[in-house]
Image 1 (tube, chains in turn purple, orange):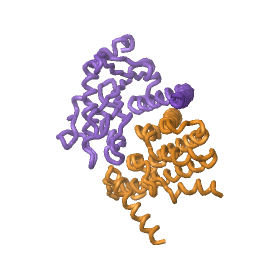
Image 2: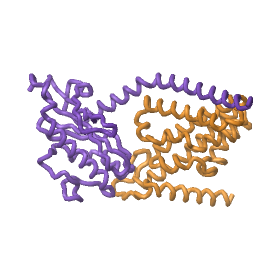
Image 3: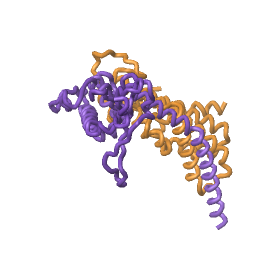
Length: 201
Length: 196
């Protein structure tokens, strides 16, 4: 019994120390991590939006899009870019669940004419050298100027107009699909995004 | 001089990748490029040196009966520290290594060194052992990553060497490429060492 107590005591002591140290590290890294995520977000937003002079990462509108597994409304966030108060573009993140490995997160920026200004791949786990080429300008630039009505939203292999990547059709197909779905959602809710901007419109 | 020996044995004679064949999960999974291999190797080295030191310091206090859980708690703590630090200060590398950072916890190389060496030796030799083993592991990952990146995408450390006319051997950066490269490397090493 005495041995048992010794074992318990030793392990508990180690676990308590570890917990304390981790809480300190977490506290020290909390702010830098938040800042890194914000910078990452801002980088993606600047890449897909026309020039702006506000901070779109805080000028946002949330619109519910269905319910998640827990029955809570799932919110979609739209980031608004303005210059001199005038709306220059809206950015939103779409998630392609059907990539080759894991979700592909794509930031999409549209101009006031509802045409795409640019897209950026925020995160992905596609095969390096193959699916990862969705992150190259050659692929991303095809989306510029495209809208729901001026292009067939499929990759060429499926009869559409978007170039797939040699050796990797799944990743581009997932991105194209997710972006077009995002555009549709954007079109349905376009009015809600600009209601509080009445004075500027 | 034995200190130097503790350090250098990990680099080649008992190299974790080529000789001990420990920690094969990260070896095969993250070596799609030289940079990923290097990053993973250095993160593992850091955890290994830290865990070896702490285990060596506490070796007389940790009862034999709970030594494995104690080691795991120590290792897991350091891995969490590495993960948080990487996310805070080297975000790009953090994104590249992704889910493989938490998996350092179950890298049997680290638990293996804690059990086989650090729990029986004082701090300084344990430190040398951890550093040597870790750098040897990094070397293995780097070699594997370099070869796979070179053949699989015609580049090393992201610098394109073979030009656009080179048709990449895609197989090399897919999972089978990891097994093939490692197998050929091991065969080569066996062949060279058997002669001498």
